[in-house]
Image (cartoon, rainbow, N blue to C red):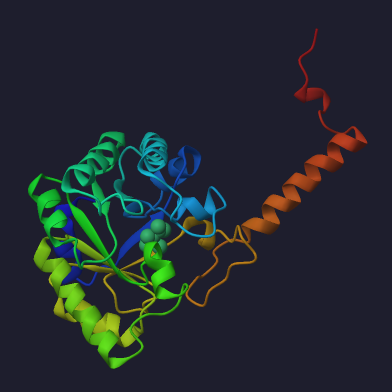
Length: 263
Ligand code: KIV
């Protein structure tokens, strides 16, 4: 995937496929897949580090994940999340965070929300770094939103989100993530914008879809929001493998003769 191909993909109604990834080994597999874009999301805080929100992850941690993913998937287009508050302090600190993620191997950055971010987005884009926007449920604002809920349910919220989508495009975003919004709203935004929309919990009419890798692999049986489709029962498969290993060791069938060094 090349960023220049995205307008063609939108025009041709050819869906864009994005998935999150945070580590080298998974990136090696995704690197061989038909997925278009890897997002090193700040959801790493939750699925890789076990936090309840995305807030605790910082730029240095994100850069480690980005570098590992880049080593595993050298040829995939890689977008990295700017973490909580890293783009809200000063332009200089914003650009330091951008530089850290780009030097680690990202080809674009993503940031949440538009109000107060317009100048930063323009500056990042004018500095040669593509920016992906993200509106709707913006997890870095979870405490202000009062939890992880669908956004855009009321008419004023729909109007606000449409304005935010236009503002993201106007500020120079090359694509826009729409998270947890009603399908009809995502469809209206998608039809209006020139830039592609990538949905998560935003219905079928966006220009692309993104899922968190651990969700689509079914690695957490306790997390199954309506919008997630599990392509694997990873939790069960991994658990079976670990239990089989434990059984084999205890009953002495592992290591077998051919798994030992002779002499
Ligand atoms: O961090 C993340 O995984 C994301 C996706 C949910 C879009 O931002």
